[in-house]
Image (cartoon, rainbow, N blue to C red; front, side):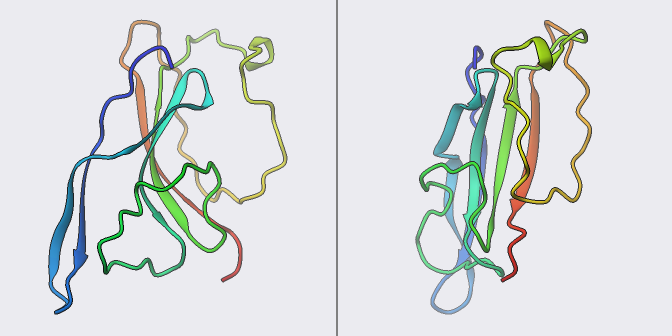
Length: 136
């Protein structure tokens, strides 16, 4: 990604031994992945959960795990995707760095339409929750 990824602040809370809520982390999300899928886009994991409902006790930082594009088999992740944007005349068929189409392994139930960013405009930032479609 040509432009440096903007740090994303995350405040993570959890429950202590008495069941009371408390702040575990209040800082920039540590799991930043510039160019994880393409040179023009980067991803920051905010949180990863391996089951539903997500475990919210303990001290573990589930936002700082090894990066995997796909969500865990019976869980998901909250991720911020940052893109430099594309000009209006962008054609992925003529872009050698574009990710080729592939058969989906996970079902997308709803994905917002993101308009192209004209050159010189601010980058696009999109928060997504990717959840597994595996029964669990």
